[in-house]
Image 1: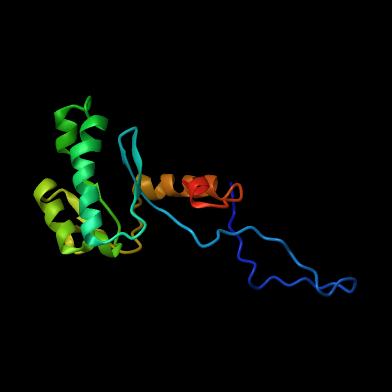
Image 2: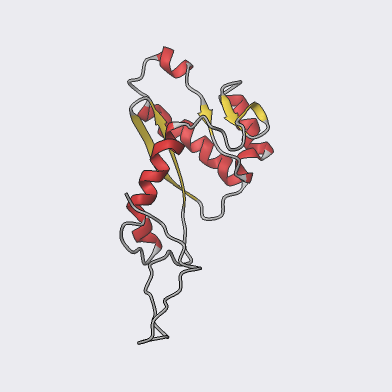
Length: 155
């Protein structure tokens, strides 16, 4: 298990070298936005999102997801399971934009969980979903297990 440790308040008290330096690894100034889903025993994605995620770019992603990705991944899933599917996402601002809400209302009517509609996901919920409970923690452990020097290595 990997640990992220905050060295901000760690001091080295030594008589021999009062100017000792402790080398620490940390992520530099790059990041990527990633979407992934879990349906049953299937991982959907990961899908790389635009660096600057906005309501319109998130809607474009949702369109691509429902047009190009989900039909392929769910091709052999029985219809009764597909009908029971729910779409969930967190409270990131692009996720609760009007344009994203409208798309989700049209394509997942009454079957999506998000901020402010139609089924609210309570903040700091004690009821984790598999993506939050397992996937993102596993991904972060893998990412931070070795130093990452550029965005391509991060991906």
